[in-house]
Length: 306
Image (cartoon, rainbow, N blue to C red; front, side, top):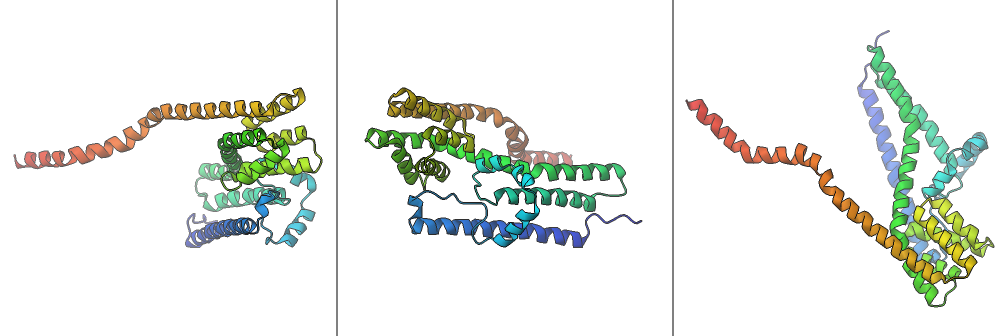
C-alpha cells in the first residue's frame, strides 16, 4: 500500500475550510450574545438582574438539543463537568450536553487528523503523532474550560473590593443586606458583569426563600474564588453573632485592597527577572546588529583592499 501524502492540497483546503467555519461560528455566537445583552439593557431587564447570559442563545436549534439530550445518557451529561461550567459562567441548561459533545468531537477530530498527517513511512513518528492526537483530544476541552474558569475568577477577584465598598455605603445608609446586594448588583451591571450576575443570583435565591447563609455559601461554590469564601464566612459569622455587618465588610474591603496592591508590587518586582531572556535573545542581538553592523561591513571592506 502506498503511503498517504501528508499535506495534500485537498486535505489542506478541508482544514482551512474547517478552521474558517469555526471562526465564523464563534463570531456569530459572540454577536448574538452581544445583541441579547444590548436588548436586555435597552428594555431595562438588567435592573432585575435575574438572567445570566448562557452559552447557547435562544435562537439555537433547541429541537436538535432536545433530541441529543434524549440520546446521550443522563449520567454522561452529569459527569461532563457541570460545576466547572458554572465556575466558568456557563449556566445554560444545555451547557453540559454541549460540553460533552465538544469532548466527543475533540476525541474524534484530533486522532483522525493525526492519522491523516502522520507519515506512514516512519512507524515511530506515526505512533507518536497518533498518541499525541489522542492526548490532545483528551486534554484540549478540559484545558479550554480551565482557562475560562481562571479568567473569570481573576475578573471576579478584581471586582470584589469595589462591590464591598458599595455594600458598605448601602448598609451604612440603612438599607438591609438583601436590598444592598440587589442594589450593588444593579450598579455593577456594566462595570463588573460577572460579579453582578452572581450577586443577582444570590438575591434571587434569598427572595425565593433560600436561607441567606446557604445562598452566600453557594456563591463561593459557584465561583471558586477564595476571597469570596472568606467574605461569605465573615458575613455568616457576623449575622450569627450579631456584630456590625458594615464593619466586617469595611475590614474585608481594606484587606482585599491591600492584598491586591501587594500582588501588583510582587508582579512589578518580578518584571526585571522575566525580561532577562527576551533582552538576551531578542533585544540585545538586534541592538548589536544595528550598532555594530555598519562598522563590521566597513572593516571587512577595508581589509579586502589590502
